[in-house]
Length: 476
Image (cartoon, rainbow, N blue to C red; front, side):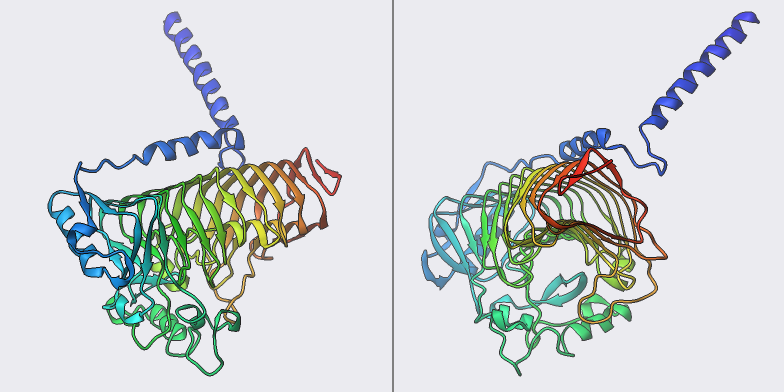
C-alpha cells in the first residue's frame, strides 16, 4: 500500500512537470512561441515531397512544333501532353527556341520542362483562350478565359527548367481592361468595373449562382491568370521565369502540397501579383525573385460570400530565401481573405526597392471578414519601403465602400530579427477596429531606421517590444 501511494505521488509530480513544460511553450492564447514555430515550418517543408516522374521524355518538336515565334503550336503541345499522359507520364520537353502557343493544359504525372534558351510566347488573341474553363477572378469562381497554364483536378504536375514563359500582355492587349490609362485603357471602352463584368460577378456570388452559370469569357473584360493549378495535389514550379502576365502570375487555388522554388517573376502589369496561394495548404515558396506590378506574394482565401461558402483557410505556408523587389507588398495576407489565413512562416528574405510599398501587410474589412492568425517573420533584411515595414489594415477599401457584417480577426503576428535601412512613412502602421482589436503583435530584435514616423497604431492591444529600436529610439 505504501509503495502504491509513493508511486501515485511520483506519477502526479511527473505529470505536473510535463504539464508545466507544455504550458511554457504556449502563450496565453495558445499560439506557439517564436522560438518553437520554425520547427513547425520544417515539418511543413518535409511534408511536401518532390514528385517522381516516369523516365519518359516527349519533345514537342516531334509532334510538329515549330520554333519560329510565329506559328501557333497549341495543337502540337496538346498532342505531346496527351501522348506523355497516355504513356503513364513523364517529361514534356520544350527545347531551346521561341514557341508561340495558346493556353497549355497540364495533366497528371506531367512535368512540362523548358530547356535553357526556350521561350514560350503566349498568344495575344483572346479567342485562343476559349472555351471558358472553371477558374477564379479576385477570389470569386466563374467560367472565364483559360489561364495561360492551367491544370484542373490533377495530381503530380510540374513546370520546371531554365526557360521563359512570356505572357506577352501589354498596353495593347489584356492590360487595358484594368481601367487604368497608364496600362493602355482608353476612356469609353469596356473595362472590368463595367456593370456586365465585376458587378455582375459580385451579384452572382452573393446570390450563390452555380459556377456553371457564371459564364464570362468572350464579350467580357476579366483577365486570365498566368499559371493556375486548380484543385490539384502535388505541384512543383521550379526554375522558370514568368514575364508580362495578364493578371495574377502563379495562382494555386484549392491545392495541397505545392512547391515554388527558384522561380523568377518579372512582370509589371496591373494586378501582376507574383504568387497567390488561395484556399491552399502546405505551400513552400523558396529561393524565388519577385519583381512585380502588385504584391510579391499574396496569400488569399476567397472574397466575400464565395470565400465563406468555400470555407477553406489557406494555411501552413512557408516563404524563405526570397528576394522581393518592386511590388505593393513583400508578403501579404488578403485582401481576398474571407475564409481566413493561418500558420504563415517567413524567414531569410530580402526586400528592397524604392517601389516596394510594405514589407509585411495584412488587409481586410467587414465585407471580406475572415481571420489572420499565427504569422511568424524572422531574419528579414529590408533596404527600403515606401509606406511601412508592418501594415495591418482592417479598413481596406477598393471598388468603393467595403463595409459589411463580417468582423475580421487578426492576432498573433510576430516579427523577429528584422533590419530596415529606410522605413518609409511609418515603422509600424496598424488600423484595427473598435469592435475587433488587433491582438498579440510582437517585435523582437527589430531595428528600423529612417522612418518618417515611428508608429501609427489604432485599435490594437499594446505591441510587445523586445530589444527593438525605431529611428534610434528604444522600445522595450
